[in-house]
Structure formats: structure tokens, C-alpha cells
Amino acid sequence: MFKFDGLTIIGRDDRTNPDRKPLSAYAGSLQGFTILLDHQPYHLEEAEEAGIDFQFSGHTHHGQIWPVSWATDLIYEKAWGHHTRGRTRYYVSSGLGIWGAKIRIGSRSEYLVLHIEN
Image (cartoon, rainbow, N blue to C red; front, side):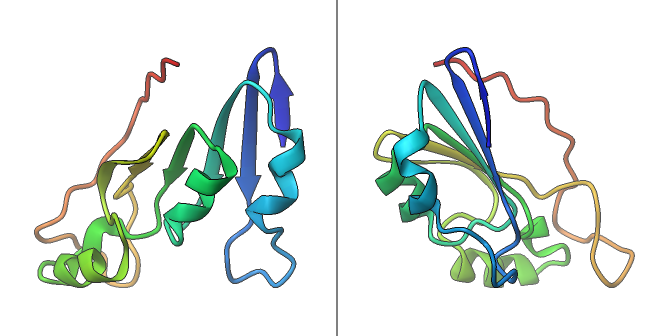
């Protein structure tokens, strides 16, 4: 966790790490605008319940190869793009990279420059 003037940034280990801290472990130390960097967009309700302002995630590649994107849409509450739950805003990136086969069909690689205003 990094704290700057009016800004808190939390980066969490991958959910496969058994030592990963639950988001509730940070709850008492949040101040100002809070950004959560969480590789996988699982359990988006946790960020909302913790009072996170913005969560940025990736991991899904939005399926990488169509029609797998349909499967990621079923697995994740939001597999790609902008999303809002209560006061918490989210963005799930399909990323630049690939996994496994070195192709993308029916999904978009993206390089993001986010401008976040409170």
C-alpha cells in the first residue's frame, strides 16, 4: 500500500497466493481517493464493501479467442471494460499480452492511459 497526499494505492498479490491479504485487512488505513490494483476481477463486491473508489484489473484477456469471450463473460461479473457497483468504479483491461496460443481472434488488445478524476 502506498499513501500520497489524498491518495491511497493498494496492490494485491494474485489470488492463487495463499498469503494474499484479504481486502478487509486494509480497511482501517484507507484515506482519500483509493485505487485498488487487483490482477483478477473476482468478487468485485469486496472493493465496493471496503469503500474502494476505483479498481483496475486484468487477467481475463476478454477470452483472447472468440467464442471464449462468452465464457469469460459468464465467469466474471465484468470480463472487460468499465463497470460500476455503488460508489466503486472498475475497469477490466483485456491487456496487450496473450496466454498460451500466440493469437487473438475476436478480442481486442489494449494499452490504457486512464485519467481518473474524483
